[in-house]
Image (cartoon, helix red, strand yellow):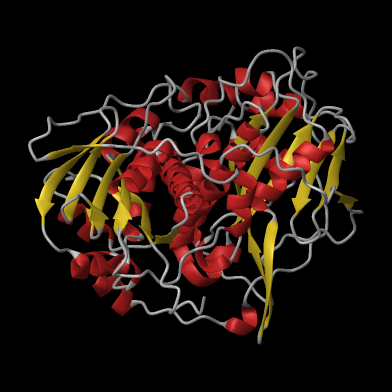
Length: 512
């Protein structure tokens, strides 16, 4: 990666930043007759049905969210088909179907901007109990796999990562990819951010589900893009790989890689026509890694953190040890909260638990040693018992909140959240920000992917932790520069990666 790649993605970030003037000067109207399908459907491949009876091992959601990939015991761990089916369902399966005048809506296990579900999962496997070695696509619409290639192709992924030890030991590697038009139909060029936001919330579920099955999951972002896209049969003009997640442990590494022949597999058209947004392709290309050697050199420790000493009042976290519901039950009932009860507060113990479990560190090849982060976490507190309303920064390593500015900021929070009511009515808003100049200096343009993905995973964990404790959450968009300005001078120079609103649902407004 070089300075040019960093400049290119930073230019993309600035061009796609929301501001009131930009939104007014470039209005966008949805063409409902051209809305894309929310699924990638292969026309000619036979489905391999996945088991429908999914056993719940009863692992508490709060434990699974914060599980370390290195805390799963020793020895080989090879998932069977039923275990894989559960992990795929909890990561990206259809958990609810709702009939509406325009047709049936399929809601997935993870939150996704606009409920447009543009992220697909693929598997590269060795021979597993109940499944032959191959490269597969997961179809949530009929809960089935489709074999794209026969044989063990894990070596091609190992080569693309430059010999990642996590990929070398895994009998299964899950690959994620986005079809850009499925989200750009609504969000236009900003949809490339959503690749990692929505990919992040999906990976929050995937990591938790795999950890609850003792599969030692880990996010691998250091891979050469072109070989992975070729193996999966992606169209680089329309699709892009997001991340690899090795699952399980075996003693023998995969066989040496071979050059995969091209795939020409017909898929169902997404819509009558597709609009190309060159900014997405350009940003994806600018942040790509060329080969395994570059991938191996890319991953490692994040830039050193520059955290000023606390000056405001401090509130040490008081997380509650209660485990709550199992991960499976939490994911099945999770949904984005569409109205918050302004008069209902959270306890400080609840907020402490959510922050503690959601920010302990993502297991990823760009976050070494384990537990490090690219992000800083800021909060606007409206209604938390025992905590003064105001703006806060979270000192993650010391586990306390520092009050930056006291006051009632409900109106301002609504403004920061693109003028929406949800962040004004929530009990608290959690913002993930990243010091982009330092991240891009260390990781080049691909560091932008890493920061956005970590923000999405943290947002997904906040969702899960909130629902585990019995309240609600929703992810929101924002006026970029206004958020940074609001938390400055502490946040000066940082970019916003994700915003999650937390609070108790307004049951009357939701018709509950």
